Figure 1 (tube, rainbow, N blue to C red):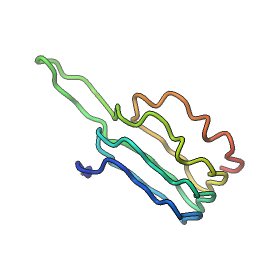
Figure 2 (figure 1 turned 45 degrees about the vertical axis):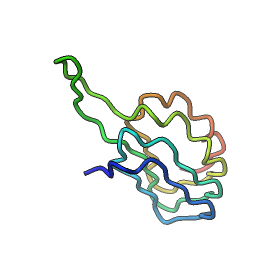
Figure 3 (figure 1 turned 90 degrees about the horizontal axis):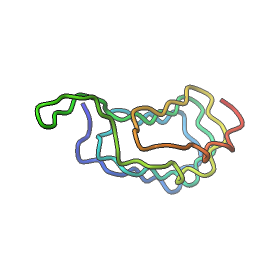
Figure 4 (figure 1 turned 60 degrees about the vertical axis):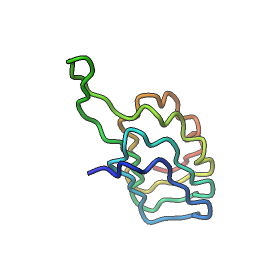
Length: 103
C-alpha cells in the first residue's frame, strides 16, 4: 500500500546509505531531496504506484504526474545495487545522474 499523505522526502545530511528503497510512493508525491548523498551501497529505488484511474467512465493506467525532476540529488556518484526509477510520467530527463560513475 502507498502512503497517501507523503508528498516529500527530505534527508539533508545523509551522505551514504546501505539501500534506499522508496516504493509505493503516491501519485501526488512531488519532491525527493537528498542533497548530500554520494554513495548507496545497495539498491536505490524511487517507485510510484501505478494503477487504473477512471475519468468520464473511461479507465486508464496512470502513474505519478507530480515529480518533475531529480535535481535535489546532485552528488550521487555510486549505486552498488539496482537503480530503479519507475512510474513517473512527467519525469522527462535524468541529467542529474550524469555524475554517477558506478552502478
